[in-house]
Length: 354
Image (cartoon, rainbow, N blue to C red; front, side, top):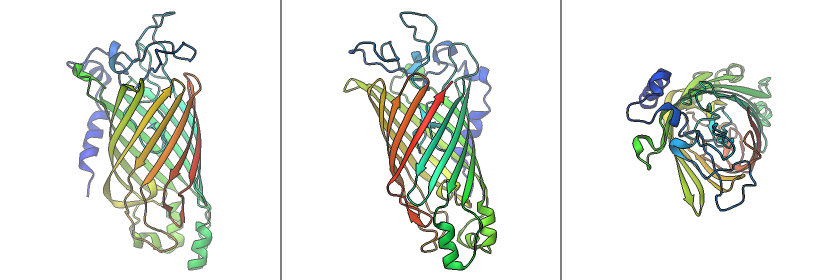
């Protein structure tokens, strides 16, 4: 079954020329909206200007080009969003419609952003090396290299089958392209969210070899490929004054063939899932968030080795050190990951925007 809806949107959005994107009908000009919905400048107007942001809260169409008292040049906003472990803008496990580190002023290219994440998954752990680049304020290109340490899974497989899979980890490589098809507050409608579509190309280095050594055992469960493509559609809206501070809400859908995000490979059919996050900034330098990522079961199960997938829940706390650096810590309830539970997951991410 083809992922028609999200795939068609993603393909259309990502081939629109930049000149068209910068001059979209009734939308304000590119000078005022270049990154209207992917740059957030956040400040507590009631407090002294002791933080790295010294302007009134700015959202929507004026978010990037707001001058400061010291200079009329646009200033870089806070380093939000941070990196999803797969290498694009959002929380730790779910996307936002806002793009990472868009260009300032009339620049075509934004500066890159890079992050390292470590995730403890109980009997397993994950390391993620992620990178993003922004084009025209409307396109985000991202890359993620994720190493999953399989923990006790190889030993459990050998005990159950007598087969040594000769593997202690798998690598999941992600190449991501996201397009901002609707800036926040477009057409002068202050209630309108930002909307982004994305295509996420994934390649698993390791799972095919494991399946071969098991004589095709994963194939009998539904495994078909070592690569696949996810399609996402995400809407985000910032409410500037919730108890006097910004609240950011994102909701979206995903179509994927991946088992456990692709760490166990890919099936030959797509499943649609819901995902979203809620983020609150009680101060200029602190963000707290809740994330939800729905999961499905593209494979059958082998008790004790490949168990039923569970939805993912996460709580994040992010320290916005300055306009270039954020440090994020979190805890997660991820249910079963292959053979073992990951209900007390925790992680740390360091991200730098150049």
